[in-house]
Length: 166
Image 1 (cartoon, rainbow, N blue to C red):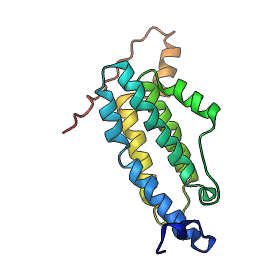
Image 2: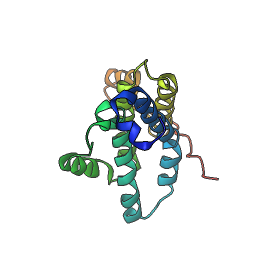
Image 3: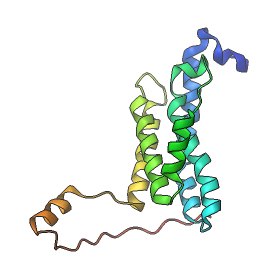
Image 4: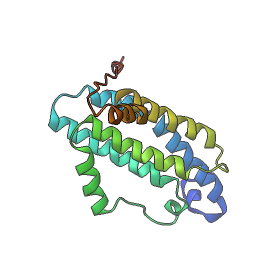
């Protein structure tokens, strides 16, 4: 491909999809830095104004892997936009949940035919692992023990400190 318009020519569809997956991979590689930065924001208004574009980009990244992006304008629908805003305007925990949801969607759409298949899988795993290190999900074994003990056991989980931006 020599020109930008070649991306939209069906003769170059495979190369266009490879370019798209490269952009998704690049975005995934910056997700952790984005979340660390957002963790440092203390003013709710600033947090909300930054998190929504970040979550929107994550949502868009999940759609970029679709071949139809080279045939039509792929946008977030108004209802999806409203839902995305409601889900992620509260705090970092909900933003991480949104990131995780869309990272999983990217992972599901990833295909072995893509030359970035392995790297995208690894990047998705790293984002999920980072989110899990900040907000651990419930351990089924711990929940089973709580149920067995009648809910009286105290569970202490140690969360690592967020890394600082250098």
